[in-house]
Amino acid sequence: MRKVFHFDSPADPYIADAAVLCCFDHRISTAVRKFLKKQGIERADMIVVAGGAKTLASPRNDFEQDFILEQVRMSIRLHQTKRVMVMSHSDCATYGGLAHFKGDCEAEADHHRSELLRAGELLTSNFPNISVEPYFVKFDGIWEVKGAQHLLSAPQGKLADSTRQIA
Ligand SMILES: [Zn+2]
Image 1 (tube, rainbow, N blue to C red):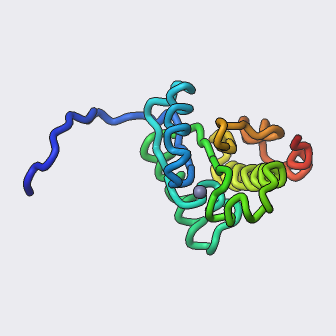
Image 2 (image 1 turned 90 degrees about the vertical axis):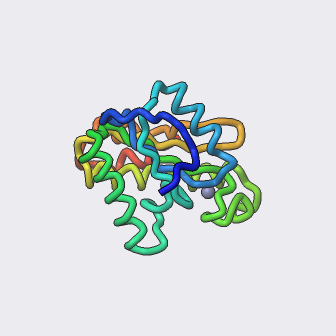
């Protein structure tokens, strides 16, 4: 092999501050990176795939969902991850963009909120000891999903009721 770039990376093993599932859309990447820094998350296991949280909430096929769950499982096993952030974003092409919602930002946000909660509940049901934080990334910033408190402590059961209390 021939070295084509020099850079000194930290070689020590690490405990991940969080695993982060988000879309690969370049338009949101800077906001996500700055948000993580603001949250004090320095070591994140980034799971960056088309659609982000959609791969769990509304996967195109079983393979997609299983693959992402396995990525989270590996982050937990290899890097002792306790915190998982799941994100989706406005105008995401995997949902047909904002156009799919006929330009209605509120309808879009409503839909994403239920998607994010579903993704979170799938994670807490698979991994009871993690806390999950769902976020919707818009072009003016990052929004936390109300009604997602049950995902933080990951209690089992009665998820369906609290899902209805989203605001
Ligand atoms: Zn996207």
